[in-house]
Length: 226
Length: 256
Image 1: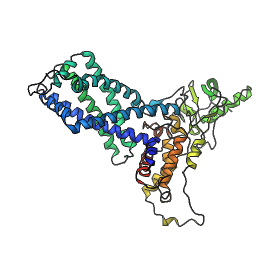
Image 2 (image 1 turned 60 degrees about the vertical axis):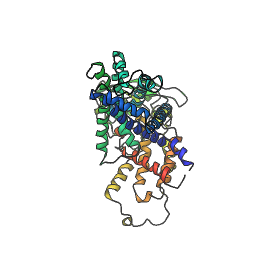
Image 3 (image 1 turned 180 degrees about the vertical axis):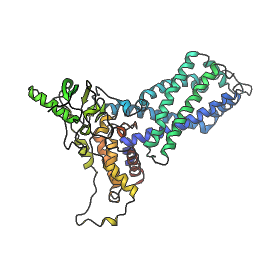
Image 4 (image 1 turned 30 degrees about the horizontal axis):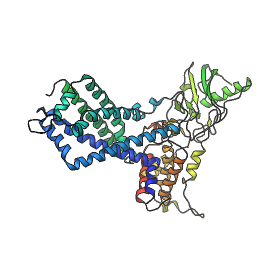
């Protein structure tokens, strides 16, 4: 049994942890994007607030939130550890290195893209999560639910915040563009009959998720929805 | 011996040994034939250096026909230069233009320390192989080959993995200096065949442990190794190694 710690601290074990937490976060994004898309119903946020109320009060979701934070932190710290180790594996850099000849820039820049996403997360959690969990949502909607939609509308009146959200969703897109298929490869799920599907689902997933998220601040700011 | 008309500027990494700092040094070459191999061009450079009383550039080479895995130059930012599926010795000067500046560096990885100039110590690969890249057989007559039926697809996949010449281009090009393509090819060539089965899960654990101990980096699936491999070793091998590693660590009851 002592083999498990040993297995997870090996180079492949660390990859497994990145892959599993990555896939978990990928699933989370589907739920998050799905519920938030309720704002596009343009019903003054009524359905969205029902969704938000459910997410804030259902005990399974609340327990899941802890798992989500653990998964996120593990993904971040493992990435940091791997980056430091990988730097050590090449102490002297090449004078000339033509990376674009053999790989995609975003596959080589996961650390940078991930750091941008971390900055986004800090802003994003402060904007909404801290408000809904701790400082409190000031108003209620017609159904008597806490009006998270009103908070969203207020936050996305600020053009700088809207621009930051949209730009950082581009880094999310590129992070997922590599991360999705990469997680499958890491887990050993490489199969000639499924590789094409994994690749195209990954590309569509990355593009759709990022566009859906980016559309939210844009739609609110431009009053596409009210 | 130069009979061509190409004029080149070479920027070559010169380093006395692993304890001293190296630097790129400029050399002018003229009269290079486009039919020369890249290493023959280096032979011309070295002759020129010897004639002027300078120390020739040390570089690894042996068979000069792309099968031994000794040559190892990082040329203009790519291992084995600009062509796909060739080693440095199979690269010809016709792949360059008259007047080009060519930067030549050694493989760079903590696990591949520079011995001198362009020669690095790749014995880390040997130690990974000794850790488990073999099958144990009893001595005596080889049994009849027909006793071991192997599906054609399986045999082909094993053969493709076995094409790895261990040059280290995968490590050289990987942004993390990871050796996973090499190690996975050496694991796969045996894992795919019946002779490799008895030690299959022991092998993957020992070889991965040795790979980690040698100080190679961790794979981030950029795919650069597969793109630069002179023998076209596929990333499928890394996935197979990961699967075998998971089976060995989480399912198999055997511990190493």
